[in-house]
Image 1 (cartoon, helix red, strand yellow):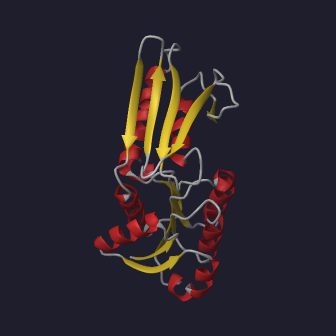
Image 2 (cartoon, one colour; image 1 turned 90 degrees about the vertical axis):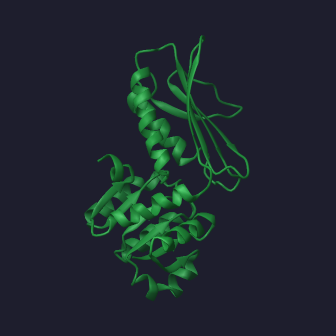
Length: 241
């Protein structure tokens, strides 16, 4: 496939390397608005675009891909407020789009484990739940999209929680909220831990990313899966549908 990369930072370069290993061609790299204008001819030849840009640029990238009818894989987080509008546009125009807060295959298995653990803990009210996440210092959104996805999955399956809150010095831990503790430490690629804790013991499950290859692999697999499809998908549908 001819792949356009939207965002050419560390993740973009990791995806480029992995995609080429799998026999794909990187036909264009887009890192700013000037690139969109200067590389338009190359973009018209792309089969799919993969976005790992920034929260400030992802919406514009999505809109540009919609105008080009270009299938899109989005791994950038921090655009929750526009999520439903984007989804409705993709569906109404019968375009192709797949997203995830995290494209690591291991993390998506971790999501599944979190869901099942929350179901098991639903009848044990003595256990409170919290989420801890650590990323590299260049990670712009806090909490991470992955941590938010974990929290939302727990909320869906745990009756006593209906909201999440980022831990700060000023907030109080309300009984109905999941507290998310976030740190930014180089060179951590990404660590997420869900903790169920009572007065007598605690249960923790953790996913630790060793490098960016897992995210890059998932993104390229998603692009391959999206070929010849129409619709709005989540990455978990590649494995669990």
